[in-house]
Length: 460
Image (tube, rainbow, N blue to C red):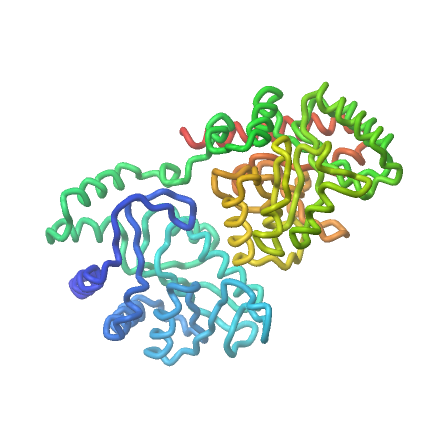
């Protein structure tokens, strides 16, 4: 124990603990941030750390070692050298060239791999690595971590059936630093605040209500959508992927009172006309919902501009919301001359199985979305910044299934509880049902209940 304390005091001097106001990768807010990456610049400390970890490793004969990318990679490398156990490297994303492998190194299915993590908070990033390694046929039973933030991660990992050990716990470390008079008065105050928040829920990034969300959304269409949502108590957008205008009008007359938006693909409508659009617009005004043209503009800026304003569809003359990919970069949506009565929704991440967008692309797409004042929100399968509205497609009560078109479905509860969604998008489950109105009512109720439940969870 004394060796461990001496070691931690040495690495503390490298600035591995910072005090302030931080948002962690898990989405939690914390007054303390721990970063073990500076140790990579001190080979002597890396060696001491690997020896401490080896001392804690169970006697199981491991055939491989892998570090959770990327902070744990130098630690796992040193551990491999000290133990003479081969190292494999897990990538965060596919490079898109070369071998295109997610796991680099020499390994065989059925080999037992020791997994190394630096800091455990919620355990989510660690579990992603576990899943990727197990997909390759590797066996993961034991995990070693340097530090446990004591915010539910260890319990989360153990519930999944994995053995996990940690060198340090945050409570012990902070008490030790205070005892040694290493902390300033302000830092001691932050520690007291930290320990008052014993429940992991208190550290989660708070789910904003629709009323609070309105304060973050500056575009008038974004605010209008939220006003409709609050007034009608519905976060349901129905995707009417129908090819006949008569059927679309019939559908919206049935479900218009239950939705906040109707999503269209006007280029698939066989008998498209401006007369049809005028009828649809009148119904949307009468029943109070927005028209959401899912055009998915995906070209260079000048072409996107022409597709938005010209042609037989003249989308800019009637749509309240238009969707666009940002594959061509930020300039592709910069000069579209979108009218103030129209909001832009970007496509950051689709719901299709085997989609090619990786985490790096999604981060860039979200960054472009945040910087464009015409963008009111984005389509994604994950939590995003509160300055954007999150639209989640692929919603179906039969969750976690894949249809023959390659779409992966999720349940409304998952959309709100796990992904932090603001709006759910439902298509075939409603318009192909025997009674679209009854089915739409079910999804409307489920979506609204899921939203209210998440709000209640924050205050328990």
